[in-house]
Amino acid sequence: MRRPDAQEQAVAVFAALTDPTRRALLDELARAGPATGTELARRLPISRQAVAKHLDQLAEAGLISSAEPVGRRRPYRLEPAPIRAAQLWLATLANRWDDRLSALERALGATATPTPDRGAT
Image 1 (spheres, rainbow, N blue to C red):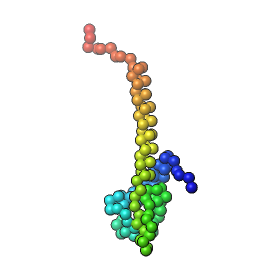
Image 2 (image 1 turned 120 degrees about the horizontal axis):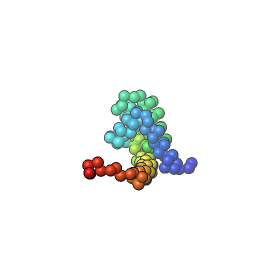
Image 3 (image 1 turned 90 degrees about the vertical axis):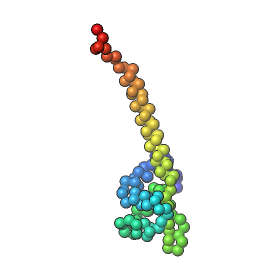
Image 4 (image 1 turned 120 degrees about the vertical axis):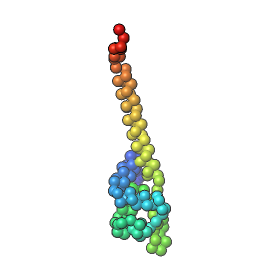
Protein backbone atom coordinates (compact mmCIF):
# COMPACT_ATOMS: atom_id res chain seq x y z
CA MET A 1 0.00 0.00 0.00
CA ARG A 2 1.45 3.37 -0.98
CA ARG A 3 1.69 6.22 1.46
CA PRO A 4 -0.70 9.13 0.73
CA ASP A 5 0.86 12.43 -0.30
CA ALA A 6 0.32 15.60 1.73
CA GLN A 7 -2.70 16.72 -0.27
CA GLU A 8 -4.38 13.30 -0.08
CA GLN A 9 -3.72 13.18 3.65
CA ALA A 10 -5.20 16.67 4.07
CA VAL A 11 -8.31 15.67 2.11
CA ALA A 12 -8.78 12.59 4.33
CA VAL A 13 -8.41 14.72 7.45
CA PHE A 14 -10.84 17.38 6.23
CA ALA A 15 -13.38 14.72 5.20
CA ALA A 16 -13.16 13.08 8.62
CA LEU A 17 -13.56 16.42 10.38
CA THR A 18 -16.78 17.31 8.55
CA ASP A 19 -18.83 15.24 10.96
CA PRO A 20 -19.60 16.78 14.36
CA THR A 21 -19.64 13.38 16.08
CA ARG A 22 -16.14 12.60 14.84
CA ARG A 23 -14.98 16.02 16.01
CA ALA A 24 -16.53 15.32 19.42
CA LEU A 25 -14.70 11.99 19.61
CA LEU A 26 -11.41 13.68 18.76
CA ASP A 27 -12.10 16.39 21.35
CA GLU A 28 -12.80 13.75 23.97
CA LEU A 29 -9.59 11.85 23.18
CA ALA A 30 -7.62 15.10 23.26
CA ARG A 31 -9.19 16.12 26.56
CA ALA A 32 -9.11 12.84 28.46
CA GLY A 33 -6.49 10.75 26.68
CA PRO A 34 -6.76 7.23 25.27
CA ALA A 35 -10.11 5.50 25.68
CA THR A 36 -11.99 2.47 24.42
CA GLY A 37 -15.06 2.72 22.22
CA THR A 38 -17.21 1.68 25.16
CA GLU A 39 -15.75 4.41 27.36
CA LEU A 40 -16.31 6.99 24.63
CA ALA A 41 -19.91 5.85 24.16
CA ARG A 42 -20.52 6.37 27.90
CA ARG A 43 -19.16 9.93 27.71
CA LEU A 44 -21.01 11.01 24.58
CA PRO A 45 -24.71 10.85 23.70
CA ILE A 46 -24.29 8.23 20.94
CA SER A 47 -24.51 4.45 20.77
CA ARG A 48 -21.53 2.12 20.99
CA GLN A 49 -22.20 1.02 17.39
CA ALA A 50 -22.13 4.63 16.15
CA VAL A 51 -18.90 5.24 18.09
CA ALA A 52 -17.33 2.18 16.43
CA LYS A 53 -18.34 3.41 12.96
CA HIS A 54 -16.88 6.86 13.57
CA LEU A 55 -13.70 5.47 15.14
CA ASP A 56 -13.18 3.36 12.01
CA GLN A 57 -13.47 6.48 9.83
CA LEU A 58 -11.08 8.43 12.06
CA ALA A 59 -8.59 5.55 11.95
CA GLU A 60 -8.89 5.36 8.17
CA ALA A 61 -7.98 9.06 7.99
CA GLY A 62 -5.03 8.35 10.28
CA LEU A 63 -6.32 10.67 13.01
CA ILE A 64 -6.43 7.94 15.65
CA SER A 65 -4.80 4.59 16.22
CA SER A 66 -5.61 1.70 18.48
CA ALA A 67 -3.29 -0.23 20.71
CA GLU A 68 -3.21 -3.99 20.81
CA PRO A 69 -6.29 -5.24 22.60
CA VAL A 70 -5.97 -6.18 26.25
CA GLY A 71 -8.70 -8.73 26.64
CA ARG A 72 -11.74 -7.08 25.09
CA ARG A 73 -10.40 -3.56 25.65
CA ARG A 74 -8.90 -1.71 22.68
CA PRO A 75 -7.86 1.84 23.61
CA TYR A 76 -7.76 4.52 20.90
CA ARG A 77 -5.43 7.52 20.94
CA LEU A 78 -4.89 10.60 18.81
CA GLU A 79 -2.28 10.67 16.05
CA PRO A 80 -0.96 14.20 15.46
CA ALA A 81 0.85 13.61 12.13
CA PRO A 82 -2.24 13.84 9.86
CA ILE A 83 -3.31 17.12 11.47
CA ARG A 84 0.19 18.48 10.95
CA ALA A 85 0.08 17.39 7.30
CA ALA A 86 -3.24 19.19 6.84
CA GLN A 87 -1.85 22.30 8.57
CA LEU A 88 1.19 22.23 6.29
CA TRP A 89 -1.01 21.93 3.22
CA LEU A 90 -3.16 24.86 4.41
CA ALA A 91 -0.06 26.94 5.18
CA THR A 92 1.31 26.28 1.69
CA LEU A 93 -2.01 27.28 0.17
CA ALA A 94 -2.16 30.43 2.32
CA ASN A 95 1.40 31.38 1.32
CA ARG A 96 0.50 31.05 -2.35
CA TRP A 97 -2.47 33.34 -1.85
CA ASP A 98 -0.38 35.79 0.18
CA ASP A 99 2.17 35.90 -2.66
CA ARG A 100 -0.56 36.52 -5.25
CA LEU A 101 -2.24 39.20 -3.17
CA SER A 102 1.11 40.93 -2.58
CA ALA A 103 1.81 40.88 -6.32
CA LEU A 104 -1.64 42.31 -7.01
CA GLU A 105 -1.10 45.02 -4.41
CA ARG A 106 2.23 45.96 -6.01
CA ALA A 107 0.67 46.01 -9.48
CA LEU A 108 -2.20 48.20 -8.33
CA GLY A 109 0.22 50.53 -6.54
CA ALA A 110 2.35 50.84 -9.68
CA THR A 111 -0.63 51.80 -11.86
CA ALA A 112 -2.29 54.15 -9.39
CA THR A 113 -2.24 57.76 -10.47
CA PRO A 114 -1.68 60.37 -7.80
CA THR A 115 -4.70 62.51 -7.03
CA PRO A 116 -4.22 66.26 -7.13
CA ASP A 117 -4.00 68.01 -3.81
CA ARG A 118 -7.30 69.90 -3.65
CA GLY A 119 -6.16 72.07 -0.77
CA ALA A 120 -3.37 73.77 -2.78
CA THR A 121 -4.05 77.03 -4.61
